[in-house]
Structures are given as C-alpha cells and as structure tokens.
Length: 68
Image (cartoon, rainbow, N blue to C red; front, side, top):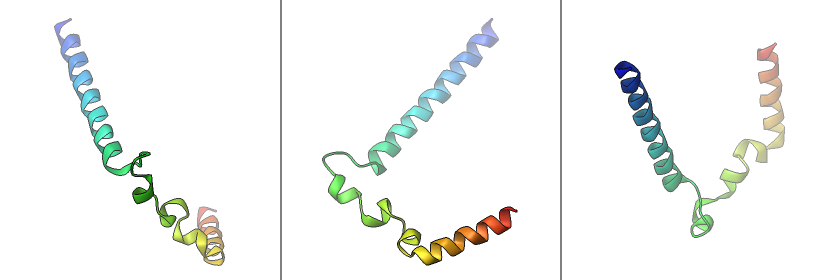
C-alpha cells in the first residue's frame, strides 16, 4: 500500500508539473482579449504556404506520392 501511495503521489506531482508547464505556455504564446492585436498576425492565421496556392498544391501532391 505504501508503494502504491508513492506511485500515486509521483503521478500527481508529474500531472501538476505538466499543468503548470501548459499554463506557462498558454500565458506566453496564446492571445487574450487584451493582446489579441499584437499576438495574431496574418502568417499565424493563414500560413505562407497557403497564400501561394500553386506551391501548396504541388507540396500536397508530392506528399501524397510519398505516402503511397
């Protein structure tokens, strides 16, 4: 029972660290209503590859051939 308690405590600590890390990443990179204008740019919403549609289609066709 003591070993099981130690495993559960270890798992709880690992989960807490993971959640803390995810919260830090959220605060650092994700936009909020206060900073949405500074955080979101055109290349975040529409990647550069999609702006050049012909190049995007060529890449998709090459990936499909490699997948086969």
